[in-house]
Length: 473
Image 1 (cartoon, one colour):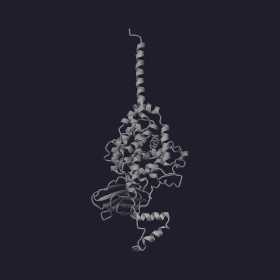
Image 2: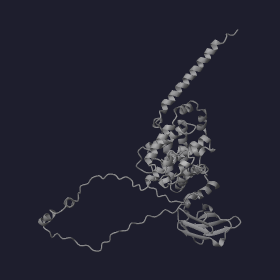
Image 3: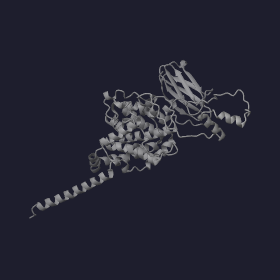
């Protein structure tokens, strides 16, 4: 079946679904409405949408097909007139499956009969019987006499059961098998080598940190710090997402891309959702760096930049990276946010062409602006990342294991309130240079001293040249 292009709108009393299905027979249209679930089938097209509120199919409902334009317009009546249906422009959210209802647990024991126990045995007879009890039986008997206070010890923690050498990775650890032949591809950002399929999470992080230490170049950082004229131009570049996002509307190309996204139901726990928000920060930071350094004009190196700056891509190592978490899964502590951005800062100072702490700070401010725009702006940025990765012969794999799922999850499950709170926390965050681990303040001080000495030396050279010139006549 083919999923057709479609759009949704609403009036005070109805919801209108416009479906593009050219060259079909109108008499073959099958429309079904089941509370919030709407489906339409007209060979070879099939569309199923899950709305936020119930709809009814009554005399006011209609389905009209225009063969000249190829559009089928279905009008459905709202069960509650005047009720607002939000997010009708989020096509991926409408296409997401209806959340499954948890089945109620049924009793597994049925009481057929009961009777009270009688105490016929005397204390002497009970004492005699205990002589033949085993040690375990005696402990149970003593516990019964002492309000069932059995001896207890804290059990040792069990290791997670691993029945295969392969490890899962990607969004919610849903994926595997994408890197079985990675050594035969030109994947320059893969930091796990041929062991990508078998590395444990602990080993992934260890290798990532080791590779960052290996790629760190003090001379490169000091040179960019001393000669930062072009970097200052990049920092001054106006972020297009800093403007007001009112009147936001997806383009036809973006809507077509969302129609091709996977249709999955993500059963993330509150803790997993918390970690997904943190992973989203690292991905948006990589996007912000790529966008700012290319001034929103992607180059052939853009896919490499995004993949290199995202730890979940290059090392399959998503957050959390440390720092105590807040008690509420929807809240984020300053320590865990600082640890998350420190990981992104380190990669921006170790891998790409422009390595500047001030540039990393500007990218963090960009992330805050993107989050403040809500799930629509965040999804647009993710779609741009998907566009960049999908056009690369090797790095498209990161779109499959991360970005596609992130687009669907953001539209269908992310909370605008949580994104707004996160935007405010990221905006007010202060990332210390000491948290990066590479003595940045000391290197910057040495660079300033060297620049001052060079300046003084140039002044002395000019004075010496003036003394050597003949006196004017």
